[in-house]
Length: 80
Ligand SMILES: [Zn+2]
Image (cartoon, rainbow, N blue to C red; front, side, top):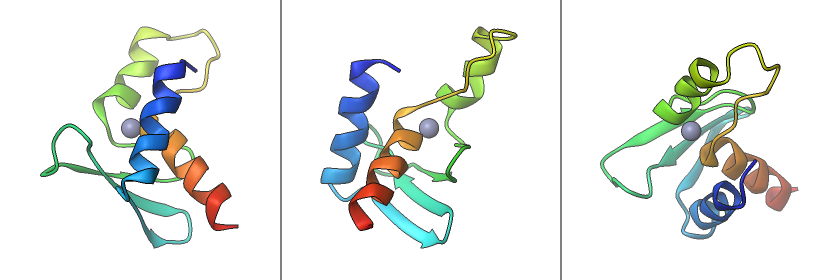
């Protein structure tokens, strides 16, 4: 995971863009477009970056990641 992904994720959490809908389901407002939001679980995200990940890294046995998924992880750690 890149440092910029982590930086973006922290920013999303700090600016209150992460909202818990229910256990394991979160809604994250896009930092670039406030009209847009993504539903995120602990291991999937709706954003194009996440969906494209497997297209670009097919067969490399990597786990897809994006700033939203990472933001949910940080959010969960903070709320414990
Ligand atoms: Zn995402």
